[in-house]
Image 1 (spheres, chains in turn red, brown):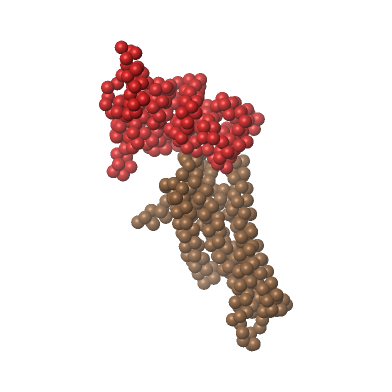
Image 2 (spheres, rainbow over the protein chains, first blue to last red):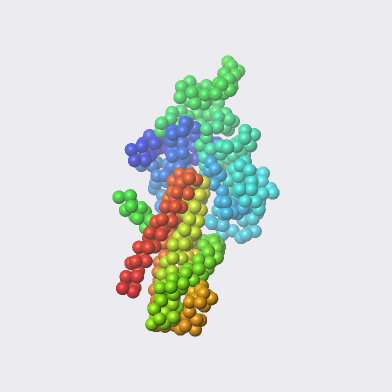
Length: 255
Length: 245
């Protein structure tokens, strides 16, 4: 579980995060949504420890990040997995090399043990024949799956995903969403996804945090988002006709 | 003010490079890979340029020594001094700033643009140590490349002198041995080691701290080449004054 208490982050005069307080539950898929410039990426980077907030605290299963020593922060980082928007796979390494990289860097496992773990996670993300291929030789969807495999290979407690569906066709996007949700439940991970994809919001948003201009505007589940009358949320989520109709049908069904 | 900030940031980067080292088995592989990319991969261009520069120095010296009172051995002497003192260490380093420097800036810059450096940071890897330290160590092999450049440069001079009819082989070799001061070679290697550090770190700095996309990677490579060359030229002056002045 990650608890965020009143965090503020500025870059010069630009006050990006203005006192966000929330809680991300373990074993649940938590989504951060909001318009471009709302502070989603800065918030995610604060949660990852890449940016340090000027005010407020972030607590990881009882450990306050700002109170940790350098070594404790490093240990905490190894409990985190991250799936980047563009996958961020190392071009010079094969798929297998990318997934094995964290094991080589941070564990004392034998080559055979590492190989066994890599085979297991690649199988888990449904990539069986791609071990020796380079990132440039595989599709965007496969790259995302490799990125997920690399993120979970160290058995993380926290999984962060920055727009995991961007640039993918709808079918692959749904596969990636489902895969992330399955992994979250299977390994009881605290997963936080930064997304613009409303399909993801409807499908896997067990908790949704809506940011607007650096403030927390709304939070709730994917069921509650159908019922909310918060104008900022409805304007953002139901901006397309399709989602307006989906909402209408949902509400009619409920009545 | 921006320049001062950049200089400060560069030295902070250097300090970070030597902190929190990467595991040795991984680092060893990275160092060997960088030696292959940076040094072995540059040998072709170094040999090619050195051979012809040596030849040109010889021809120009010969054409300017048209007095019958001056011995032909001076052609060999001038070639040796020019190649050992300046052309091999400094000229080759400028070439390396272009070839290796651009490679370093663009490869690290691309990693920045594609979030690969962020991925390293998120994992808890010291990205500066992982990316820059192997390049610094690999560039310690650069004096060997310069030694080859010296040999090939003088060989190029000999070929030009003998086959161009500017000086007989015996006279040229006599000039090569004339008043030889071994400290000149030491001076050249001291310069080379300093330049190798600059060639490894300045382009890394430009790549690591670049912002933007593909276009900015190209711009960073150009800026990196310009600044690496400028710093080499200034250090060349300072070191020459300190060591030979």
